[in-house]
Amino acid sequence: MSRAPLHALQGFVAAARTANLSRAAESMHLTVSALSHQIRGLETRMGQRLFVRGARGVSLTDEGRALFDRIAPHLDAIEQAVRPGSTPRHDMLALTMLPSFASSWLVPRLPNFLARHPQMQVSLQSSSTVVDFARDLQLDAGLRFGPGHWPGLQAVHLFDDWLTPTASPALIARLGRPTLQTLRTYPLLGDSGNRWGGWFATIGGDPPDRYVANFDDSETLHRAAVEGLGIALGRGTLMQPFVDAGLLVPLFDERQVSDFAHYLVYPARSADHTGLTLFREWLLEQAREYVEAVASEQRSMRGQE
Image (cartoon, rainbow, N blue to C red; front, side, top):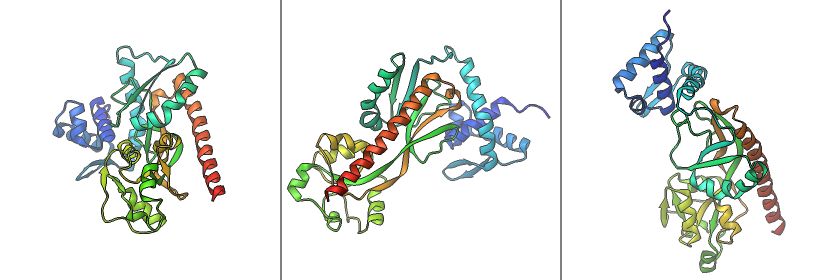
């Protein structure tokens, strides 16, 4: 049997990562028809379906997932090897993450890491756009909030997050402190994920008929709560700096664990990066301390009741 064409394997990996033939074809400067032909040829060669086609894109079959896990790291290594200036600097670490998490959780702790490892240089890329590590080879790792699995990436669980209603002291002074039973009658701030629906379903009660305002960005949502616009269903990591500064107050002891959690993610090419190894060890230590601090705070709040 002849060797599998490299361009077909590259097209397969691109389609797997984007879950969209149009975006994958664009990234490879191909037509969708040409990319589809390559993938069909690969499926014929292997005698297996690699993708399930759907209205919203494509998803890997079990056989496709197994093939992706075998070949994607090798294609990444080839791309890294032939890129100009590709020799890794183990004293430099380039990270990507959401701006909200960078400012609220990582940046306040980062001086501790640099004090321990003064030889390290850290570069942060704050963006709400999900990065494709296969294309942006200058990035070594990222911090992500999600379900815990991203194709082609190692994911190290850091900690879970949680939700609880949060308001400004000014709003509490103006309207009084709600109870679980009266919460729905207060001005609530909505979000694009309808997290309030999950809160009321878990804790009890009915969501309001309307929200005073809706937000598709968590950082803006928390800022609106600080300004007294309404009560936000605050996320632990994002609201904690505001709570510490006295700008927001958690209204109840009840907390709902978020469906998503925080992870350190990185491609196979970064596994031997000395700087990333140091950062991962430090990050896991910081995560453990944070989890314990949150648990201690909850125990203290219960003791005051």
